[in-house]
Length: 420
Ligand code: GLC
Image (cartoon, helix red, strand yellow):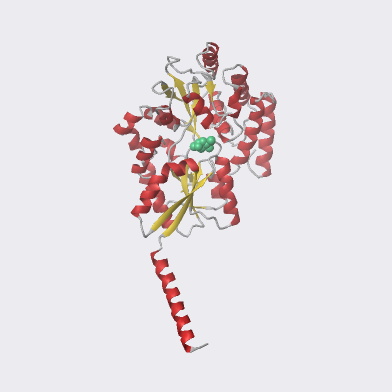
């Protein structure tokens, strides 16, 4: 090689090293968060603002995942199992946490959120973020099941399961609405959420609170399954609910086709929009309950969890803090109707003016009931959905379905070494 050529190569090498060195110093730290698509859309502007505020230092990327909790959890778990997930944080549904913590995928958030931060949350938003005293999730918004009712069709909402059936039937028989009571009857996680509320209404619980043993063949659980079937058989709910998820339910109620709806708080903003046929005619309360039952509202909600594998923990925590700040919560509530988590915002005059139902949301959050807190939750819920779905389509008798469900749940817990 000629001297000149060597010199030239040397110079090129130097230039390359120099440019890599320069860009690694100046390239912002890349942070990636996986979110279900609706939440990715809801935060798009806030992410842009975060990136503008941190220009040259941190760049936040959001990966839009599937909407349904099962699908996005499958996606996250597949990449976590492969070992090098392309994410620094995940938006995590409240039911995923025990499994993700048991698998040691998550990093405790205690260095970035202290007791004052926790004390600023409404009680319902404090649930489901910690495992064995360690904080692993910071809530993005509060979420809890609600009963929406039509003020123009009834002077007050029904109080008991039987009242609900009678009222829904009266209104459908009279032709006032086509669909009576709409809720989430499709075979997916929404069905489990509705079941938790209905079961509580009859005084039951999925697992015995004291022993953790399944209670799915109790008198209350059987009565719940019978009532769910009766809703459809009696015509109080259309057969179509056995294929409804949240969007179909909201669509029917918003179009003025239904008298009562079970859904989450986000529905309120949509019902007040210009395209809503029921704007101004909607009341919000919690699910009906038998006199001996407990009014309950299923605890929902998504929150940010930091992955242990992330090489950008500090930068990711900064992004999580900004996306969950008071300002971000207020904006999302006003623009999209996502319920805030900070107690102070529930008393905020501007928010109360936009949404006079905030006090009802706060009240529902105070009676929020979590789904079973176990790493086996996804499998338990799957068993429940299969049996209940058969009940709703009329393929299975409620008592028989609940007995089978109890047996299958015990087998699952035993095979995993859990309590049964
Ligand atoms: C809502 C809730 C979530 C629940 C899901 C079911 O997104 O926040 O906890 O699992 O609905 O569809």
